[in-house]
Length: 366
Image (cartoon, rainbow, N blue to C red):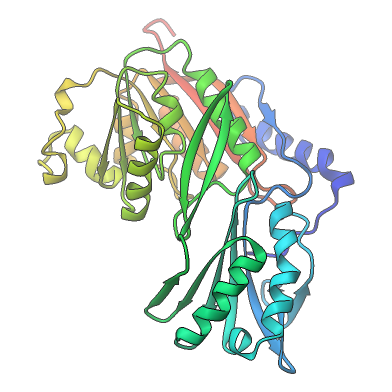
């Protein structure tokens, strides 16, 4: 994680700069006015990781400026982090520094928290963790009222659980999500709620079935299942697929099927290029797909998946990289029109921008 300078008094100005950048970047595609969804100016990030710098037998949280990997900047508070992260940081470090056993060979600490204040702390070491470490860590877990995991090479010690459960409020309904220590989760939970509500709003008037690529732990899948007859979701990460199945069951979703495969593989299955054993229990021909939902990595959609997407009447596209989004939209807008365009400020005070786009197929006359 790079160091982020936080100036709450400049928050509105930096968000306006992002809106202006998006307006200029996508102007040639003639999108409608950009819908802008702001973040909290502080304490918006639910997870964080810190290197531990050992100096004179004292451990410090440390970050490093790009290009200066051996010049630490010590961190005592973290204003972009959740209140729970800030509440835990120094008591945890003070206890670590009071114990040679907990401090020695410790080189990284990671935090994962929820809106309700649940917390998971991972302590990563350059040494094997023995029973005496576990006893001290268990006492620390009780002291801080959080969950603790110890990690070292080829070793993972889970003292209680290796996940937290986030609860999001959408349209007066609550959805719960298991968020596993090593799995991907949206870092800004309040903005995540805004993204999900926007996606629900976009799909209000759409019928039929939904195909979702890159579904992760079911973050969008589960609420969107309330809008469609059936949902088929794909994800390549086995950790995310496992969490998605837990979340589907926890939210009592009966109309979702999930397959562990890449978007490229599923595109081949859709084109009937070759069969896949992982789809043997899923009848693709039984789906009446009206909509595809994609949330790809920073590299965007590959060419084949882009072409597959153009076969759907409606495309919901969430992007973490405006530049690759624009490349994809240049192609998609040959057959589709941008109906809605949103900017979600997941990462205030940085150049990173999350976008949402709803596209519909052009009529023969347009």
